[in-house]
Amino acid sequence: MVSSIGGSTLRVGGLASGMDIDGLVESLMQAEKIPLQKMEQDKIWMEWQRDAYRDVNTQMSEFESLMLDMKKSSTYNAKSTTSTQSDAITATASSSASSGAYSVEVTQLASSAINVSSTGISADAADKIDATASLASQEGKLGGTIPASLKFTTYHNGTEEHEIQIDAEDSLNDVLKKITDGDNGVRAFYDTQSDMVVIERTGTGDYNEGGAEIDFSADTAAGGFFTNVLKLTDAEKGGTNAKFTYNGAIEMESKTNKTTLNGINFTFNNVTEGAANISVDNNTDAVMEKITNFVTKYNELIDSVNGKVTEKRNRDYQPLTVEQKEEMSESEIELWEEKSKSGLLKSDSTLTSGLSSMRQNWYAEVDTGNEAYGHLSNIGIKTSTEYQDNGKLVIDEDKLRAALEDDSTAVYKLFSNNTEGNKGLINRLDDSVSNTMSTIKDRAGSTSSTLQQYSLGKRLDDITTRMADFTDRLKMTEDRYWGQFSAMEQAIQKMNQQSSYLSEQFGA
Image (cartoon, rainbow, N blue to C red; front, top):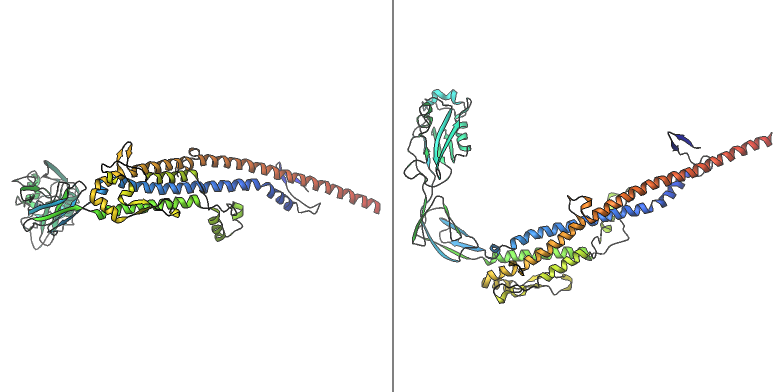
């Protein structure tokens, strides 16, 4: 029996024939869906492959950041320092510092200018002000008028004028906080126990020789709030410069307790007892550590990529379609996909070519200005002779240390010389990695790429379109099957009706 509602066919199967029409159509459609399932599996595989490519690019990008550090001369010319009076003076040396001994005698530390109330600021010492209450409410205890603003001057590479606005509800602590937070180069606070205000420069050094560095003479409103109310007189303890003698011959000064000479950064913590001796030496251990870490990361990268291009694909475990997953548990799906994802980049030409190029870079000759160190093997680094290592690097630490101690500049040039036609090994390696990453991006894009911006994306877009078209055709095929079975049901029903009629006639 078949009826039509709103132009669509109402399917009622098997009433006349007694056949399982639903089951028959479902079986027929399962066969029809096989090409769609294959397209869905191909799409899933391409998405996995795209993600695998992107993972490789992420690894290579992280390795690229390491190469940036290996291109710097400072990496190969690290310095270490020692001080005979480390409690009074310490030093760090840049790569440009000359190795050797230095003598520094510190006779005076740099200090900050500071001004403190000459007496307690409360009119009655037995009834001190409340620094958290509004100034208006404390005016009687302060013994002075509260102005609408405060003005003061500081000296630091020139004269700087400052003005602090006072609001009606501001407390003394609020005003002092405004002074501190106002980028004025000073900090101020009220000490309850002594009943005094402290205001001092945040930086050290003498910037107004012979005069105050925090000048309140501009504060004339209300008779001078700073001087008359807060009792900040001209009795300022001025800032001082650090004074020291360099190499026993040159007397020098510094606005701070730090100074840099000949690429050495000195820090003064106290005056010295006579001269302190500072030694600057090449820090071979630090350079060794950086080179060793870099080689380790390189080996990890090629080991990972080699694993991807040699991993066999398990074709017995094709990607699961949505329908197939509905019939499996989460653990079953996980185990299946673990096997299904094997060999995503098996024998990939981009990666195998990139690995080959990276390995070849290490065999290049570089003119370092020292014939003894023109090849990687000269400094104790070579590729492993073990076949299964696939070109990993191994280090002879004793030979590398000897090369660094003998001529660290030549080692630097071997790795990072940037002259066209005579590039260092790291620069060549960087070119190979960058080219490989660019090719991968053309194929797999990035997380921000649209489907039309990379080749796998275009294929994914195409297969999605074909799947949608095929789904429409399946719908038409299913409707056709139902139409055919419905016609059969109608014919059988009609024959049954005729047979019943004849039986009734003969029986009569």
